[in-house]
Length: 183
Image 1 (tube, rainbow, N blue to C red):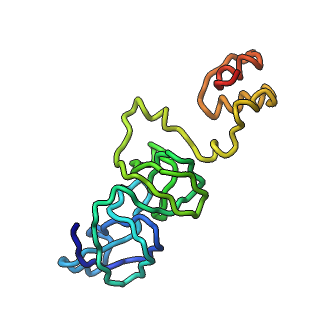
Image 2 (tube, rainbow, N blue to C red):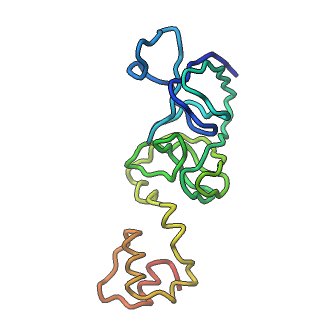
Image 3 (cartoon, rainbow, N blue to C red):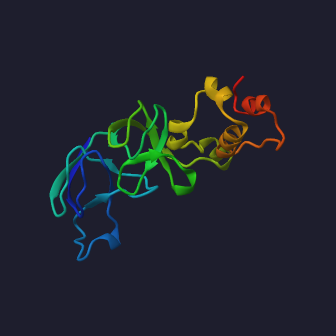
């Protein structure tokens, strides 16, 4: 465990991801101070705050090396979702084209709720990017496999298109359902 003093350069709500503010972030920067700001889209955050922080406030930062952080969710997130930082210091489902992942959720939450994440920083190798194309919006609207038989061919093809799965233009309903993993 370690601790230090830092100055907050913008308002940061509780349960948001926090980053160290770099050289160009502060006018008249004092070189003997550490500055904090909200982490931004795709960044690897340095901390998470458990309280509201106000611009100009001097705060004590305590680093406990805890692998679990409680962070506000920007969207609905199922348990086990690989997440990244959004533009407001919240977590959202990981999109490789937008930056690095920072961990995964331990339980399901709705947007605005606080979710526990297990920190696991990184970027996926290119051969794993296609597998990470998960979207919470797809999760919310995708039918259960036992409902696939109730869909039209056009709706099945739309699901296949969303998932990036190729199919024959003249595929039968049974073939389309099989491609989606249904019976």
